[in-house]
Amino acid sequence: MKKAGDERPKGNPPANYIKYFGLAFQMCAIIGLGTWAGLKVQERSAMKFPVWVLLFCFVSIFVSFYQLFKSLKNDERKNGRQS
Image 1 (cartoon, helix red, strand yellow):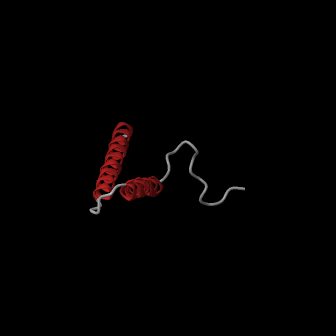
Image 2 (cartoon, one colour; image 1 turned 90 degrees about the horizontal axis):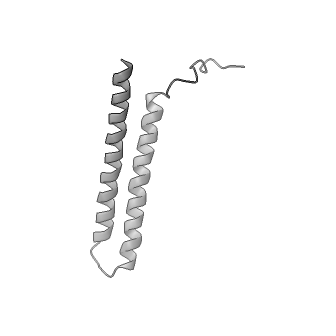
Image 3 (tube, rainbow, N blue to C red; image 1 turned 120 degrees about the vertical axis):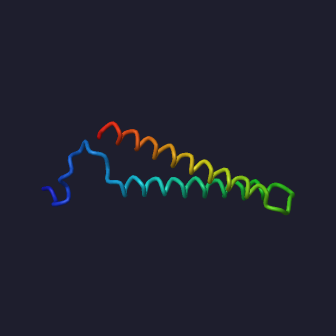
């Protein structure tokens, strides 16, 4: 038996908030893993200044924003074709 909210056809893409929630989760995961990797490398190095943490953190932020930009451009291209 179908519920009242289940009337969306199966072929339609998910709602925007689901897509952007997924993108936000990916960004947090990439930045978190990059920072964690920087902490692990920093623990093995003999330097007192956290250069590896900063480097890995900034690189992971750059990678996550690049992925976000690429995904938004892809969505813009798909929406341009449909209109």
